[in-house]
Length: 303
Image (cartoon, rainbow, N blue to C red; front, side, top):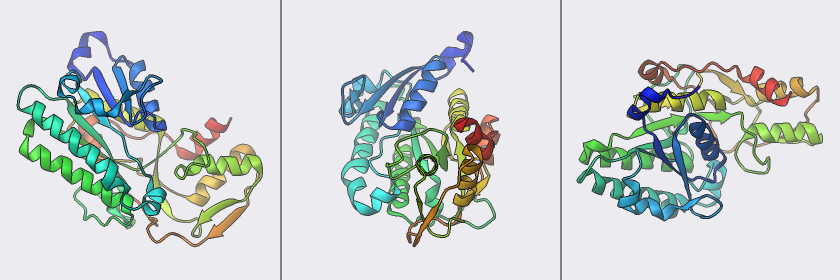
């Protein structure tokens, strides 16, 4: 899919992405470049095509962008519990500096829009009834609590500076891109590695925790739809389909024709047992809906 040339200027066309070395950020950048956008990646570690993150505090540079996708975050749920306070020292401080720069720009000229990748984990455990954006929030993990704090910082700044018009996406668990299975986030690469290496797969709990998973293709198309609509506000983004860890294991076993041995451990107190979110608000605003069937996509990926 591509952006037609006669309509190109009405969409953001020069985009900055923070946290550029992250696997998801790089996939987003690659996709947007294919769609015709100019994309620059910023990282705490500059070089190799990545600009220093501190450049985003430069109002003259930031003013040259139409959109800033803020994907920089130094923790995942597991490491957030291990290294408590890291988000306060790094992520929230970084966000505060970016918001200050955007607020300064909003007083002088048109300001680039901020798109923040939040997490559906802010809802905590949900019931079988899918939760909408107005639902009560019960973040269980430190990671979710810090994401929620970041949301509130953004919304507070937007209240004081209405021209900011941020977009906050509460994203569920994205699958479909393979990363290092040793990394403490991304269950699918670990399942696949366990199957191929014929090693036990450690799982925490009974394996039947039910969570919403969104395939990477659907995620990228949702992002494209949001940019085309110049969407602002706060939205859930998920598939609306729940799968357990056992479901994912079964899908990998079927695709590879291999059995996986499971090694059970007590579930972490901060881990969500059920996550069921409603993305209808986003769908109504953009026309997007999730189309990928997770087990089928796993089979195609492994073939």
